[in-house]
Amino acid sequence: MNRRRWLGLGALALGLGGFGAWVASRRYAVGDADHAAIELLYGLTLPDAVGVPTPLATLRGQPLVVNFWATWCPPCIEEMPELNAFDAEFRSRGLRIVGIGIDSASNISQFSRKTPMRYPLLVADGGGLELVRLLGDTAGALPFTVVVGRDGRVTWRALGRFKTAALREAVLAIL
Image (cartoon, rainbow, N blue to C red; front, side):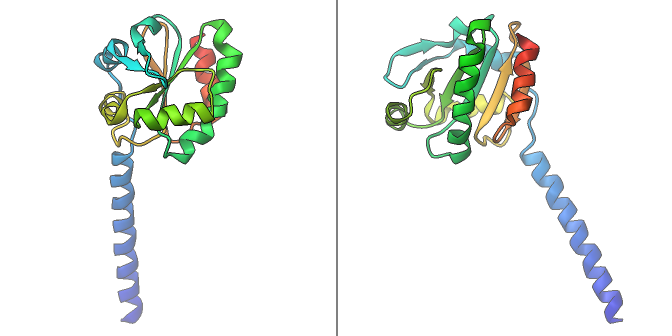
């Protein structure tokens, strides 16, 4: 009797664990980004780290990596040197990289002074989370990286810290 009870509890635990994994996969899944989300991205004008307005429409027609990040996000900060290296390596081939901070202007400005990047760091405050969701990050988690081809289509996305080899492959595919 005791063995049967333990087997029943084990089966129940496995079932609940499976359900929890399914819920987590739905919550943190990367959904599809539609054309309207890309148009919204290109329609934005965001201030850079020193407050200069930057119209993202100037990036239309160029291969693009958009990295959503925040100063309080350790994985975001960890991947920034790699993005800097990508900018140095691929800028001459037309690639543009932009970091959109889901953070306050003062935090991004302070970060930028301490840790300058080759690519622009723009400020979207908390309002950038809606754009993140529209681009497919249904959880609104950071970091979130999107690769956009010259035709304005999203070709690759990474929720969480990206793998450098995978980003390189995605970039080479749009160059």
